[in-house]
Image 1 (cartoon, rainbow, N blue to C red):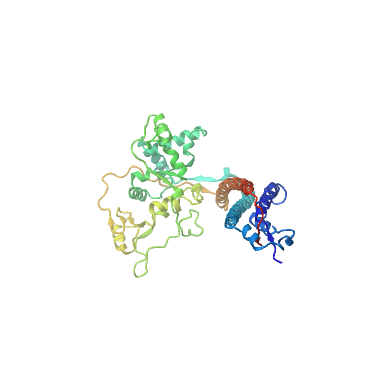
Image 2 (image 1 turned 90 degrees about the vertical axis):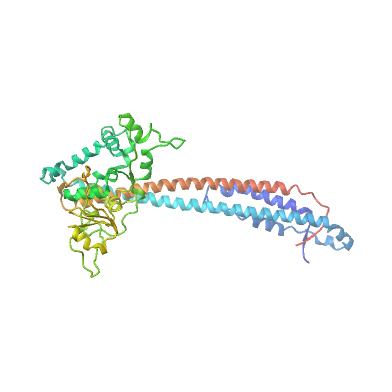
Length: 472
């Protein structure tokens, strides 16, 4: 015989089921075992409780006549049963959603936990590698390295002249930054503004030939030669601070320092952020200690390299060893970020005549040693500057008679330290995400517990009927 249950007793039993679930929840989420193990599905519990609501003695219906059944199953009673059933279904659906949300947060916690373990192991391995390489470097006697410079006095003074010419523009951003960096060396605790500043464009590279230095400086222009170079956008923001009205706060940043030394900033100044520059995506010339870029040489329609082509400007800049690896936050060197951004594929020719003959394969501009200049394809810069730009790249470069392998190890140390710094940043980010996920998990857990308790209370408010039956 098919079973039946009393509709009047359903709220009581469902409420009891919810109370039981609510009572068990703290134990489900407590310590011991996996803290993120999910509780049984409350929706399934409700469904199971409803199916178990059967009358213990079905024989009591044997003598029920048709009239009594009609009285029990009147329209009002049927509507009340449907309303009650609808609320039970809504409770089950919402509790299922809360459970799914809770499970999702638990998975996020596990994911960030695993990431943190991996990053901690990686950092430990990088620390050991750096220590091993530093021990290897310690075996070299630096005092025995022979430091040499080109004998030309003009080359010896070139770097000092470049700095003097920067300081002549005393109210420029470049001059103020340079003065601030000098003061920061004397007082390392001061002027944290400069910790992210690499330098001024004019001081970050050298050129072997004075004439080429003049031409490259003219090509870039004075404003770019005086540009301040920062590693990150955070460093850029630190240089200039704005008030609530959007105006420059003259008491903070570079403006504040300029005012304190009596040389207020005049006009605008360029700042180049290496973090936001797309680096060169190609390869480097093999076994080149300067890590020059492997750019494809220009080709005439007949497949030959143009006569008089000397190379690419970006590769004619000599960069100090400490700026050859991982200068930017993203791991790029000055050549593949800053100088490739400034010069791109600028070609250098021996003469104007050679440059004009190569017009068909010039796409990003060209210069010639006798003063010819093409800014872009189809854009010629004619005539001659009445006055040469006073700020040029220094000429000549310092050379070290280093033992074989020393520079390679030194550069590896720099690159590994960069990887460790990036790993530490990733660890901090993962820790923040882990903390946020745990907060959300606890919030969802409390929301589920409160919902089940409230649902139990609501269902207990249903009035008790005097009988009736509902199909199983």
